[in-house]
Image (tube, rainbow, N blue to C red; front, side, top):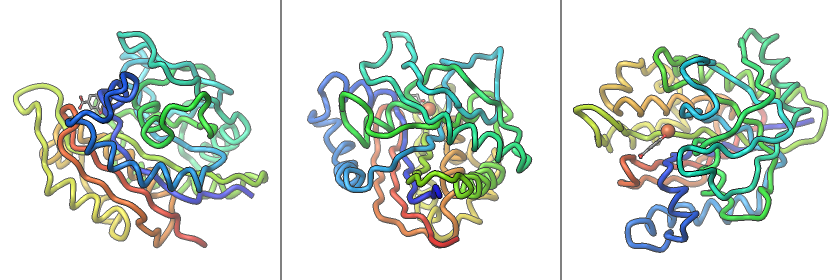
Length: 282
Ligand code: DHB
Ligand code: FE
């Protein structure tokens, strides 16, 4: 039987990917950001899952305003790296897990989550930067990845409550897959940031730290945060945090916080990172 063993939350700032790709991680500006991930890299080397269900958002790379799926699940065997304007990042192709992905698509849809099934797409920094942060620069990624894309780019995104419920359904769906698989669920994006307009550069450390604190033991409070509160408190791109709630919903009751990082700044963003061990049994 497959099971969700752990969850990882991390920001997915594209400049972090560029710093890794260009060998700039030891520079004064970047060193504290990467220091926060040293523990996690050692941890995941000992706890490498078979599959990462990676919750992220596409930033108008694979999808455009022509197609805006609220929740999309990748069922392909592999995913090319998107060209976001400067050529694709020099990272390995992302290998999928078609068997688990098709099972999840079926179970989630029968569980009344109307997923969009994607059989072909490229993946952008939202998905590749978290892989680089945890796995560095390998020849091949050491895990298979099931991409789960959430629309947080074009209004209306799904509510945090709906994202959490999707996570709960993911936990059930993983547990009904017959193959013995260790599955981690990662939630990416956040924390507070706003990339445009009058409030560009907004960072709200009290909001972010309260969010980090409540992720483990008080997720019910986070489920209730309305869109307008994310906008007001965490900036227009702070809404990416609803993707962390998919991860949290998949961990069941009483997960354990293993690691926490908060660092400002990385580009325009407050970097937040959590490693949570799943509650077990549910
Ligand atoms: C930045 C952060 C993001 O999450 C993103 O998708 C793009 C840019 C930034 O801080 O620059
Ligand atoms: Fe983003």
